[in-house]
Length: 336
Ligand code: ADE
Ligand code: ZN
Image 1 (cartoon, protein in one colour):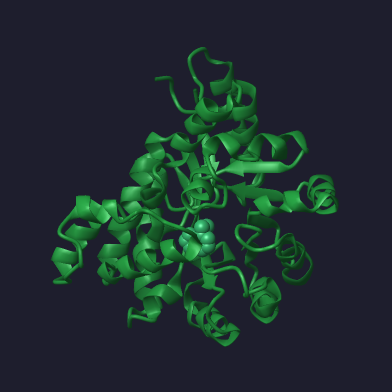
Image 2 (cartoon, helix red, strand yellow):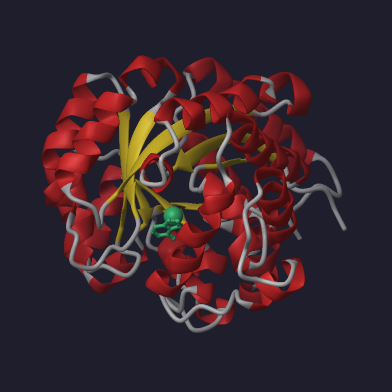
């Protein structure tokens, strides 16, 4: 196998990197009983019919995360895997409300995660950002309280996001908290157009003012929206394995990513919840090559887009793009 291309991962839920073995190790450390005989039986439960069926298990397993050390161990395990997959910069979602609802203090979550990320540059050569994500199926008031509770830690957070069950929870519900996040100097992204309609993408852009759309694949149902997204070069953080496992797309062979590239959209490829969806980000790149015949130059375009769409400063972006240029010019370095 050839070396993976250097890339940024911009759509990754840290709770979705919890591998069954780590889940059981943390459960034992914390004296928690999981309703599965072991990692293999747990893995066998990873058969999802839609987003909600996945979220039910995803939230259930967060029960093993209790201490600062648990969150640090989770993040460090991801960073080690990501580095092996060619990730050179990662912007990482976390769902504070999934933890505070269980009585875990938001400070415990943020200190644990950011503590691991602090060492990432020296340990793995990997720069990072943290994206605080609101659960859209909870009331907007809960999101406002979460942002307020995160106040003492905002210097460790680069952006806010919006995730969880999409349909029936349009972006406009969160206009007030996004305005507050913007006033606090945070960057803005939101999941839209995964299971929800193209109108949610437009609303996320026009009402929330987001700079990137997470998923966004349903934009293809609205040609005028595709034209706009291409003209404005709004980044879309697409997650092919996730789309197949959550039945948004039947098979990887049917994934619309080539169509999205051909339409001039600024598409990136990401793993979303890699422990649950059958692979990390380089596995997604390789899957696209195998299933859809994406060429080396298309895969390079995707890696380049990931750096262009990231929230790094200009100096770091320059370094990352130069590294990609060097890798693309070197024989034997490719995602295929
Ligand atoms: N939370 C974790 N993964 C998610 C996804 N793919 N969509 C919405 N919310 C999520
Ligand atoms: Zn996601």
